[in-house]
Image (tube, rainbow, N blue to C red):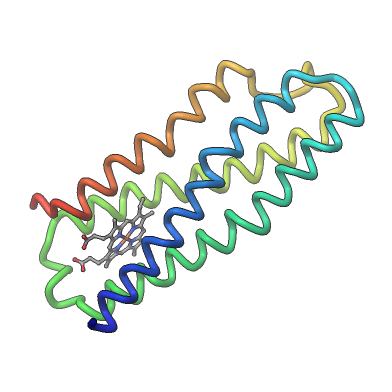
Length: 147
Ligand code: HEM
């Protein structure tokens, strides 16, 4: 087994753990949005904060570092392929989404009631679909390498 393939496998493992958080966090924010009970709101904040700091952020960092290592390792081959650049654009959007999730956690903690949130439940439901769409695009690009 080559070291390059092993690194690629670990890259994919961390993609999976990162996405576990990207999929679940907006769901927690929706539940958070639906309650005015201070005890429940504090509980949701704790769950969101832990998910973000303990699962999502470390997984995102390791995914990006391993992806960068793979890219540098095979730069000569990969730099000439269009799909990798298209994939990097999609990853940039995903990173923006990740940081926006962090901003929403802080905003929900700062506001006392759902009426003070700057985003609606409907927005969160649409926001929730963004990582799924990017996952499909990125995996198809990375696996089929179409151009
Ligand atoms: C900055 C972030 C990232 C960089 C720099 C990066 C870079 C790379 C590189 C260079 C490879 C090896 C390609 C090859 O050997 O032909 C790879 C493989 C792969 N990446 Fe990423 N990646 C990143 C993030 C992601 C994300 C967020 C996902 C999923 C949503 C992902 C999914 C995959 C998959 C499925 C493969 C295996 C493709 C194959 O069959 O060879 N990557 N990545």
